[in-house]
Length: 146
Image (cartoon, rainbow, N blue to C red; front, side):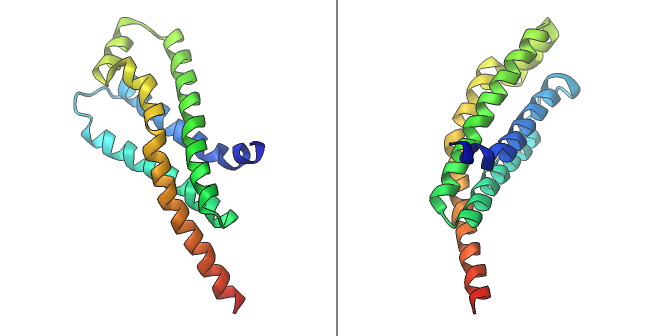
């Protein structure tokens, strides 16, 4: 378990930073009523982080299963961190303007449920990344073994 945590903390941290950054943008820095571009970018970033976690772990361990576990752990750790940061943020800033911006960007349900809901599709992205990582490791190993 400790080894898994050590191998995914960077990926979980990146995912947490991307979501907290997006929330900061939506709530305070640049509120908007049009979220399409932001959702495309934040989704692409999350897909890249999950796939990267799976690919990196599978290429180093030569195990797709390890890459899948890394993706799942990345999502779960990030979801817990995001929810704790969101709780702390709301405890500090819960004025009417902030609450209106949160409501306009999807509401509190999205703030607290979306990070948990992303774990499953994120793990699927990590699975694809893990398969690619294992193939790359195998390809490089067979190339250098000759």
